[in-house]
Image (tube, rainbow, N blue to C red; front, side, top):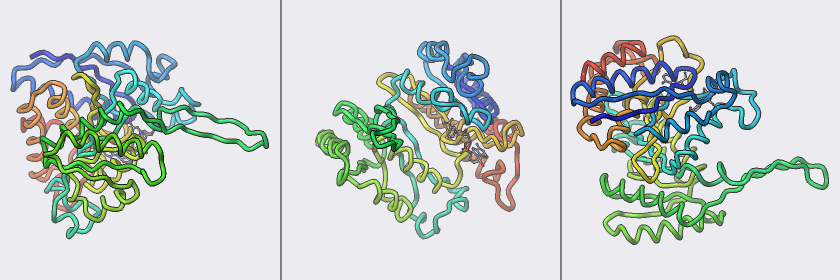
Length: 357
Ligand code: NAD
């Protein structure tokens, strides 16, 4: 099979970690008889420097013309003062909207060799930790109307409209229920229905969708309680579905309890097979250009691309097994290093994973 992948290396450690994911993809191609063609496009700080905007139209066009998109990370102190649309992060929101990627999938799984990196007590994680957060990605307060004004008595006021329509809730809930059917068949829908109208609509629609999936266990949970339950008893969760802002916060919390930011991949999906695959961490400017970054989250994002966009299950399994095997062998980058393990660079980690394929 031949697949065309748009590659956004981005800023900071982006080019280093994406390079390792491409190395692993090429090894998969060699072993399974596929060709992956890469088209590099600009987004983020580097796009501001080279084109004057964080998301050039050419990038959107080339991503839309590809089978899928692999992204490193964007941002850094150099561009932090950029006002409004001139920030690298505007590129992120823009590409999600332009590709109509409404579902963000973030698995959080505690890998056995990294159990000691988990900040929770072992009696909490003894029951395991293997959940997926399905976050609505192009609605809610991040995309609703934004206003900053001075009111009639001189106070500066700002607002972000948290807005959802029934069809937006319905389609993200379906993603969650379909995913649960392939896992442990349990969905927890997270909202703030005791306070927010948008959450009350969320609850109404999620119950309607749940009725179509009688084989999936379903419950609601308030977002504040969910934040607490994630550290008290994470094993109770299989698939969590929630709106954009709550999902942003809860998915960072869930990934942190698995040990390292450098380990967690993500997929952003729309109606078709085109997806955007990226690690959940940022551009780590503090270690950029030093060949120190952990490329595993990006490598595992490439595995998600094979699974969700290209329907290459065996190939995705091969990457995940290679990562497990390298970690079982005691190989570590600095962020997940512990006593008695072998410290390797970003590129050596990529080599080891590719060798295991
Ligand atoms: P960050 O995730 O970049 O870094 C937080 C800490 O984790 C740093 O100490 C960093 O060295 C470490 N870290 C992150 N990824 C790592 C990896 N793969 N291997 C080893 N260590 C790793 O978060 P931040 O410092 O808050 O943000 C830095 C920049 O990234 C900011 O400009 C921010 O806006 C941007 N950002 C981008 C994205 C994205 O592109 N999706 C996401 C979050 C933050």
